[in-house]
Image (cartoon, rainbow, N blue to C red):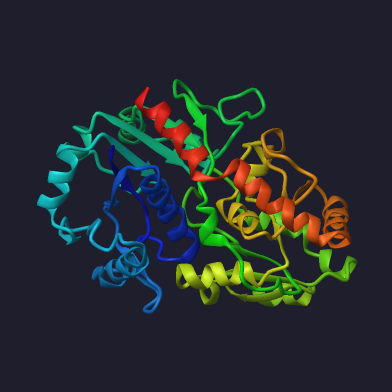
Length: 372
């Protein structure tokens, strides 16, 4: 099938965000589909060199090209700037691809428009990577926002509990089907020994959805004193309060320093011993069942992960390779458990990634649902 895939690579030109879209494109192509990447958010791109939202989209468009070209996708993308100008492939090229496309997939608002060429594609789906935030925003949104989601044939979410009795998040008349981030396992094969630190890449607070939920800072303060209670070292790649964190024993680096490109992001994960991950408050408080695309990449790299439970334990194995915690005491116990038999947990981590996040499983189910 011919699949138009919308993502946010230029809008957020960071390694982790890039991998999210890239692994959909690679996974779909490996399944035999013809893919084309579109980005059409109506917003200016973020330019990290100038540290600003830039009218000139050249940083973002160069970034897209650099990210996709090594994988043979350098001529399979188009970026629509806020002023309606096309970069990469032309508007006519996009319309020509859409005319014969079978499926339109929109990840995380890669387009906020229903242009005629998108609307004519017979099957469509939105993939929500911010469960609870998205549904709470819809519940209080203006009519145009609600109508935007109503036009999709299917809605998917990384929140496995959304729309079930396990989560109080209101969904109204919408049906949200659970899915996970696909991870192209071979792209995460490790050739280096793990480093000494439990690590993660995190944003202390996000700008979006500020009126509907709480961020990671509200949860992380509960674990602020954790380094004082264990001999295990930590390194956070974070854009948050580094001085505060260092005062409490956390090693920190600037998130941008390890996320500038997909390769640098992957290298940071590969240098890690394991992941220690705290979730956004809204994910936890609403028992969304959210599971991080980043954690899936740690697992695929053979790096164990101990991450906060958002309700995902009802849907994924926990105990070997992947461990859950809901308190500092559980976090400390999980760290000790990983270190007590690290080789086994590393092996189990990669097995979990293969069993639950491989594109042949995740994307086959998704496409079968969309086209049913």
